[in-house]
Image (cartoon, rainbow, N blue to C red; front, side, top):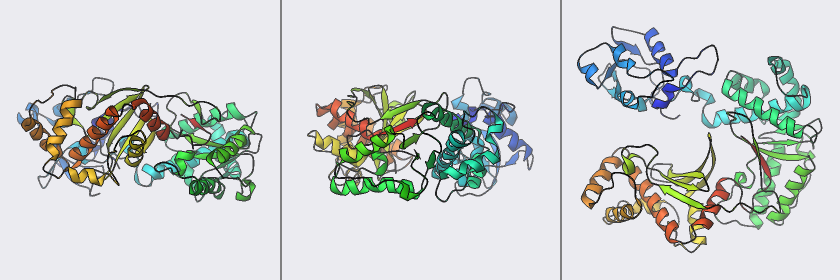
Length: 484
């Protein structure tokens, strides 16, 4: 579960009759659970999953002058006003044993919009994707119209919709239990189902079946696996890069044997069949993103349609709005035809990747191995021979800091640029101390990639391949639609 950040204090509850900032909700809960004169039971999960008792203090003049704690808390602006990051970061929680905690030590629980318990992360994803199957079945097979009233969402209707869904081990009762009270996802699933119904109600004739994690869906992806054995692809190429359909809708049937046998002598051969089944309104892969506003549909990998040629625009080595510039993050950001791609280490010192951002949700990821292959494809010597571990090992050598500084001088053009190796080394060491090895590895990987990318002379070609892969739009990828 991710850590709590100041932004989580300035979100509004989703229910219209409870427009309370999460900051207010948090402190109200602490007030009600008051134990002593100035200490409170901490209601959120610590990393060690233990409950503890804390008193609230601040590091500014208010706390030093022993003014009331309420005055300190009031420095955090109410929801709707300017967000005061400085007072937030000054807030400390002191345990009864004297240990100090900052807000980053708290996990982002469901009170702050995070996943709680069994509903967090990947587990939440499987419930929401499976839930989308039932919402879609509801509009196509039960009410046969858009969802436009609470009565449409009756338990009876969902039970009926289940006849046309196969979501593996997840039952409709399990999905209702885990998703029904989540207003944000419920609204998203309604919007996505309504869009699909309006676009395909005259094409996909009832009954329409919906699959997620079913034997039917496994069989679809078995053809990707078999084709990959015969037709290797540069770098890694998992099933989601071939077709990122989170759910599949079909008029073929509910059982695995209803799916016809497909041939897979080549990627064009297999992908032509996937496209033709979609055009005949028999089978369609649907990639899902959380719908925050009006639902939109995008089509990808239409045979015969020329792919977009993406262009490298710019890069920056500092996070947006960071005051400390280069040393305030482990990230690099590259803009490619208006799409921002974030590059950073993902497992502290073991792996590194790029992630294309697409509005409220990530558009797709590309691992360091594939980035390395695309560099070598266009004549570069590459970032490493076998894995990112080689680069991390270099950060431990005597020549690392000098090379790190050399690339910094060439490519960093942001504020507060340092001119001397000695001061650069001191700043880098101070930042790396936060999580030993992480800053060195991530920031150096970013600079090394940038150097190979810029000096290749093939920036637009490499940039295009990065986006194609991240968005599952390679020449080997198959037809799908995305709802977002």
